[in-house]
Length: 265
Image (cartoon, rainbow, N blue to C red):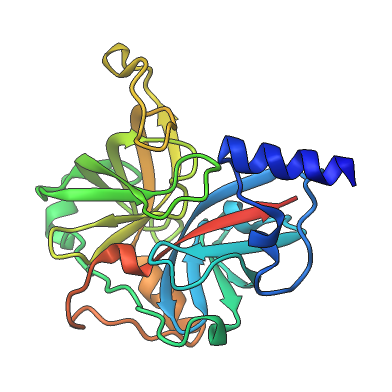
């Protein structure tokens, strides 16, 4: 009993993961606090269906998601599908299935299908990238373990498209931005609020100008190179799994379509 009281006080006072009751709101398996906890971001794509990075949801004993909008919290989720493979390369995306009765109105995100035409890539060697002239892009995500009411936002610069290598390689974006652990599964969003890609990997550049800088929730920023799956591959993956997305739906805040993903391993 004393052990659980101590854990509860630690969680409440530190603001790390909330109270035990928070995680039991919608039933399902009870997370184990002795487990390692991995966290990331998810995108609502249909009622009860969330798109995230595959590595965020892999090898989880329990997955819970919480909505940025506050519409639901700590809902149990299971992996419904993972990204396809081309030879030895697997697309780092996964679909999560959730009991959508927990949130009657799931605001699905819109997708932007922008991708350079073939003639724009003709002078770019296969497997290499060519910079794309898009501005006003943003990356959304949940850095840190804190149960957050809103995602963090950081500008995206130097967006480049990686040329597929004879269909052996997926359509990927590379970009620079002040990301952090927890942004995996988060979207790159255009100025109109539609999704260009899903972030799944980052390489810190150790920019001395960012030393000591933090996001509002206390997570450290890490300027560097990020890699994202393009909507050119995301939309077909969703269609193959029975999810039809729209690029012409009425605009709404992208934050309403984002969730926080917690994986207890």
